[in-house]
Image 1 (cartoon, helix red, strand yellow):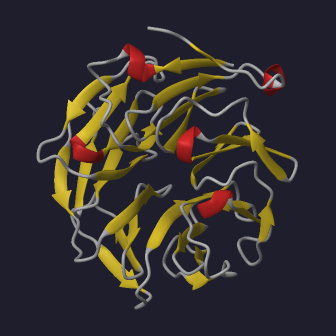
Image 2 (image 1 turned 180 degrees about the vertical axis):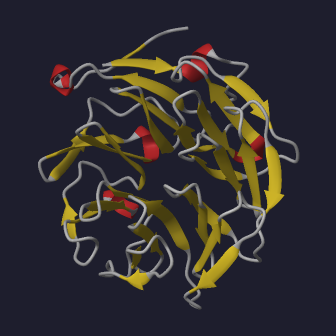
Image 3 (image 1 turned 30 degrees about the horizontal axis):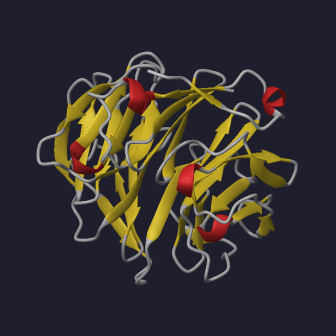
Length: 306
């Protein structure tokens, strides 16, 4: 396993106090976002990065790449940032809500969806110019949103909340709730039946029936799980203290050894067919090259030096 620590090589692009939150790629470029308006763009799959510092130091909490290759980034202070030129330039629009947005996605029709406080669901079909808002009228945080295809969508949130839609987000219905004490920090559905949700204490729950029932899968960590990714036939999870897990059978095991991150890992995205990009707190930004999973059975990892 070859590990490239970008922070050590790109001192002018990555700062040690950066708090990265999300990564997204559109096939031409990869964008990483974080607090203080930090926004990084790569044209070579994460080997080199160029820094864009957005005006006003927005607290960027999420970034997505839409099917039309437009990037959209979400500021927790109710602002949407858009780029139609692979991250070179960005324009901002207000998100019309009094609630705090926490997660963003783009559906297969290029519609934008955001979820947040007071069980709020926001939808825009015109690139954020206008928003339609709905709510469960419950004082709970919705923390993740994803569309698997044009019909099936999933939202998760506080107090074990799981919502699903089978009509492209027109209607949202409660699925099988998680345990009330489970606070979803990351969610990933690989199809309309199969899904995974990560939370505190290293917990990962699995469903095989579209979220109607859930079972806990063993993990090799007690650290919170902040990100989940399917890359090819493999599933990965990242979390606090540089935790990186991969799924084997019905268990989640450590992938080699944890990455040398002094804080959390939250963002995870594919690079090409086999590589991974990971980012998190304290300027953690890594490109992980994987040839074969079987090649890491010795549990070792190497870090290249600048």
